[in-house]
Length: 262
Picture 1 (cartoon, rainbow, N blue to C red):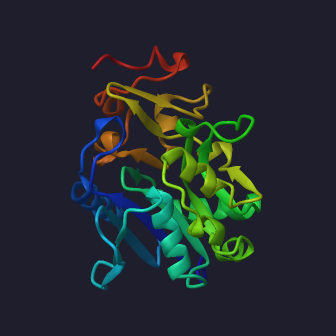
Picture 2: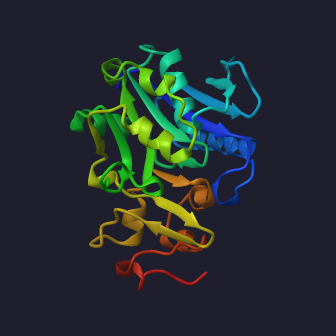
């Protein structure tokens, strides 16, 4: 990746969220900064994109000391709108654009290289880190993580999201499907990196893509990012099964004899 330029685009939102989550954009931003310092990467630029209710214009503030560009935009088309804005504003400036949301954090060294390597291997337009099978007429809204990666070549092929950018979509489901419909080819990351802690209710975490032939510790080592709520499990010097279970993880039956009650 010596001559490859990669950026990370993180979509933030200050306001009421799904499942009664309230605004915590600054807290998420501070944690992203902390983890981007903790885990090694070779990103050229990081974009923190804040969607704000009531805003009518886009404002850009570059912080060269942090190597973070802050973008403040109207709250339109949710996270997908934030990603599309950056891809259009900075078209052809980077070879790859990694797209994620404020409540997910990367927790593995060289995550950017992992994603680029897998993207090149699959040769698809857009690569998501995990998704469920589509059903007739679209995708199941709550069963897709659109955190992923796209190349500048693919952006050119799809017209830099022109149709999505001009659409009047507003709901979460419509925006997600509209965003994914921009692509003719979509794939998931290789099985090796197809697992991470995923928060989906107040007291339950399910780890997808685990290898039942590996120990919990070995499976944890394959995780490349985690939800905001469980970031503390990756905020120490060591990643161990004991540390994982300390944060109320529930896992598949193959691991049930390895975990401890909290």
